[in-house]
Length: 339
Image: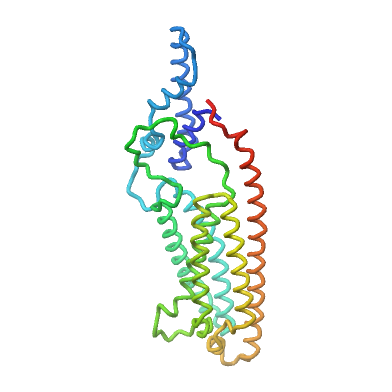
C-alpha cells in the first residue's frame, strides 16, 4: 500500500459517506498531478525521484483531518458525518423489524380480550407501535450521540492536533471490521430499551398498572439482570471500539454469554417469571390456570431460543477470533509501510 493510499483513506474517513468516493478521487488526482510535476522537475535537475518527494508533497498538503474539514466544513451537530449514515440505516432497520412485530403482538393480545372490538385493537396496536418507535428513536439517538462524543469510540474530532502534522502520523489502511457497527448499536439500543421497560414499574412508583414480571424477582433476580446487562453494554462499547474479535474480547464474550445462559436457565427453572395478577387481569372469563400454563410454556420456549442465540454467539466469536489471529500472523508480510 502506498503513502498516497493511506493519506487519501485517512481524509475519506472524516467525510460523509455519500461524498467520500468523489472527494477521494479528486484528492488522489490532485496528488498524482502534483507528484508528476515535481518528479519531472527533479529529473530535469538531475535529482533522483524518491519517496522524499511524496513525503514532502503530503506534508505540504497537511493534516488529513484539516483537509477533510475544508471539503466538509465542521458544523454544530449531535451526530456528525462520520456516524450519521450508519445512524440512519440502523434506525430504519430496527424500526422496520421491531414496529410491525410489536404492533402485531399488541393487536392480537387486545383482540384476544375482546374479539368483537377490532377498531380498538387496531388503535392499541398503532398507539403502542408509535410509543415504542419514540423509545427506539430516543435510545438509539442517545447511543450515537455517546459514540460521537466519547473518546472510547474511534471517531476523532475534526479539530487538528496543535503539533505539526507529519507522514509518520498516518495510520495503516484500516482492516475490514469483523464486528458490525449497525448490529452492535442495534443490540445496545435493544438492551437499553429492555432495561427501561423492566424498570418502568419501579420508575412509575405508585401507578395502578400491574407489572408483567413477578414482583418477587426484584428481591434478587432482576437486580442481577441489570448487573449482567451493564457488563454486556460495557463489552459492546469495546466491540465498537476494537472492531475485531481479539483474544481478550472473545474470552470476555464467552464468559458473559455463559453467565447469561446460566442466569436464564436458573431463572426459568426456579422462579415464577410472570406476575399471576397480570394474567388474571387479562380477561376474567378465561381459565387463569390454562392461561398461566400457556404463558409458562411461552417463557420456556423464549428462554431456550435466547440461550441458543448465546451459544451461537460463543461459537461465532471463537470462529472469528481464529480468523483474526490468522490475519494478525500475516500482517508483517502484507501490511508493511511502503511508498
